[in-house]
Length: 266
Image 1 (cartoon, one colour):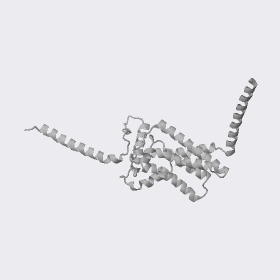
Image 2 (cartoon, rainbow, N blue to C red; image 1 turned 135 degrees about the horizontal axis):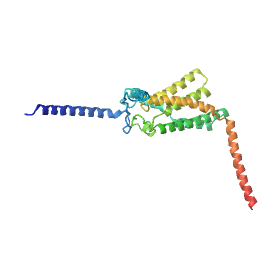
Image 3 (tube, rainbow, N blue to C red; image 1 turned 60 degrees about the vertical axis):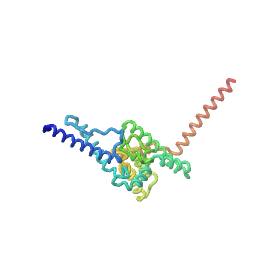
Image 4 (spheres, one colour; image 1 turned 90 degrees about the horizontal axis):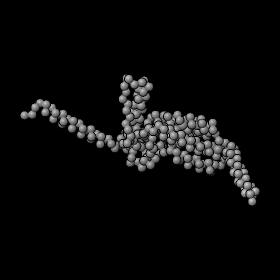
């Protein structure tokens, strides 16, 4: 006969085995739409009363950020709650990508019908390049991993970024929206349309689980402040022509001086 201790151990083994198999089954079932990247490290939000109040507050805010971002990712994949509208949300997301904005601004700059239009497009192109560089710099410094993205989505995989803080789409949307409101838009209906577009682009990053709430929030603030810098460093068409003529004159003087030295030696 088996002892009571051996029977208890065997029961524990059966319970643990069934629990492990159920957890494995749940893990396999949810692996098709995981929120975290497979290679990303999970963030540790454990706190202790012996830690400084600043550390406790920061970890609490990061936990809220993670929870809220996870709740908003309703279009992360086709099996999500709002997976049926995922193509429409992706289209809104693409409207804030840097490639169509750069191509459109440069094309309008080259085909502009007036000097004023070319001047505006020139500064918009420079603003987009400035935003791209600053966002890339901050992302490289912070190095915050992005949430999981749909690996089966060829488009998102091609444009997928390694780091998420800050959101380049959100900063670009805020920058372009403020640029248009200050330089081009003069009617109330167009103002509402521009602001609504910037909000939808920022929201699309959360619905698709591309980035966290803090990434989008900081990106919006960053893009809003970038326009102040662009406005302060505004390049006029006359100033650009004077600068180009100055550089051309310097090159001609340098070339003429070199030719004069060659003639003098001969």
